[in-house]
Amino acid sequence: EVQMLESGGGLVQPGGSLRLSCAASGFTLSSYWMHWVRQPPGKGLVWVSRINSDGSSTSYADSVKGRFTISRDNAKNTLYLQMSSLRAEDTAIYYCAKSGHCISSHCYFYHDYWGQGTLVTVSS
Amino acid sequence: EIVMTQSPATLSVSPGERATLSCRASQSVSSNLAWYQQKPGQAPRLVIYGASTRATGIPATFSGSGSATEFTLTISSLQSEDFALYYCQQYTDWPLTFGQGTNVEIK
Image (cartoon, rainbow over all chains, first blue to last red; front, side, top):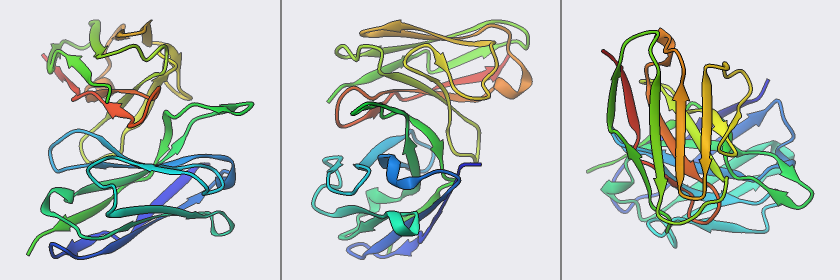
């Protein structure tokens, strides 16, 4: 059974830092691209970042570029999101999400499994 | 970035009736379109990918159609567990983008 469990959320002051983790099980993490998606309270889903299967390529939403860093440790089956210079507008539930299937070298980036989410609150 | 627009924002439907949700992309996304269901306090759940392929465990009452810029999610006979928020998402280009959601509520 595929499971992903996020941790590391909490209350942080503006300008502070936080590192989120996503522990994956039930599938071979190293075979899939992975994503972070966030959802501000009462609002919709917003894609944040992605990382390819071996960690050599990443991309970010403009709103977090230069402040957030996605990484992975395939040996530990864990995905990370290092967040710095946090702002009030970063307040959200953060979900890790697994990418869909790949055919040959082409991968499809829908999210077939999601973690339960971890809440990050940026406030003084 | 590709803007995804869903309509209507809220859909009021009686149990057993059909629900039709729409999603429009600001430019062609081919068939790289997914639909997600989200219930209060829960993570999203994949319903449809590739515009028309049901995800694992999704009943046949759910169907997706469309390509390029116009997409539809149809729930042929609404069950109590189907009342939820539904989001569409394009995954053809970065950044990946979601629609703002359609809330399917009990009439």
